[in-house]
Image (cartoon, rainbow, N blue to C red; front, side, top):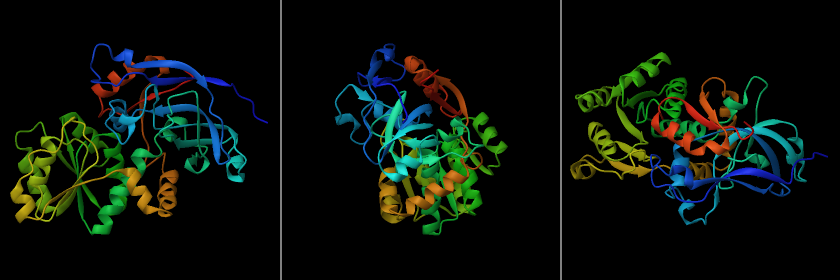
Amino acid sequence: MSTYPTTMRALMLVERVKSFSQPDLASCFEVQEVPVPALKADQVLVKVACSPINPSNLSQLQGQYGDFGKMPLPQRTGGEGSGTVIAAGESPYAQSLIGKRVGTVAQPSGMWAEYVAVSATSCIPLTDETTFEDGASCFVNPLTVVAFVEIALAKGVKTIVHTAGASALGKMLVRHAKEHGVKVIAVVRRQEQADTLKDIGAEYIVDTSSAEWQKQLENLATELEATLAFDAVCGTTAGAVLTAMPANSELFVYGALSGEGVSGVSPLDLIFRNKKVSGFWLVQYLGQRGAGMVEMVGKVAKALTSTFQTKIRVSYPLDQAAAAFQDYTNSMGNDKVAFKPFN
């Protein structure tokens, strides 16, 4: 029988974050000694090796994601990660995972801890060549990318417009969409981000630091029949992107990196050109896919070291949370920042 400690260190949110540049950011977090969670029959206990920071985590810490703002503090934090299964509940499948290296998701229980209890069915066993860093981002970004391409194919769309185009998710989308014959127009903020995307084979890039970027996007969207967009920025970017797209286009908002709502959408576009603004939430999409989620996870599991590979730029121990968040928010288009609880 596996033995493990009865208590563990966990990063706790003790005060809502107002801004990730606030001078007292460190006071929002505490590393606390808490009980190692008891296991239900269908759960496994994962010794956490690596867990990335995602944009959705930032929204959670500010109380602006799902029901996180209603949850009492202190609150466990972190969404996905990788590690080794060291114990399991009574179910045969949970027992079969003991000793295996896995990627997993742990919302709302929180991955930024030394150990986490998760459903056995939420674990993706990692292949021998998949490192803990490769496997740490095996759910949120890859499954979102698979969903985007599924939506495009279902709608018969030839080209996707994607903001935050140089993000880890954006790079995955370029690779995965190309495998399915779907083009991507990546919208980025700086020339160096455009250069990075070109290095991985991106063909269509619009840099918003150019004074002519909206006209460039309009020309590309018209030429490539780009009638579907996914926006992670919101604010005026959302309206500008939708304005540049052809009639009968739809823009899905899946993030708000600007911290603002959708603005700049023309009523003329909505009324006379049949353009639409919708929302996308991965959790809801996966719920609608039902058993089809197994197929999606299978695609991801096979390609964690290729199409869906994520580069971890730097890692931090739990007690350096403020530094980790400031590092991440200052360079979000420059690969991932992660926590390694046992550092």
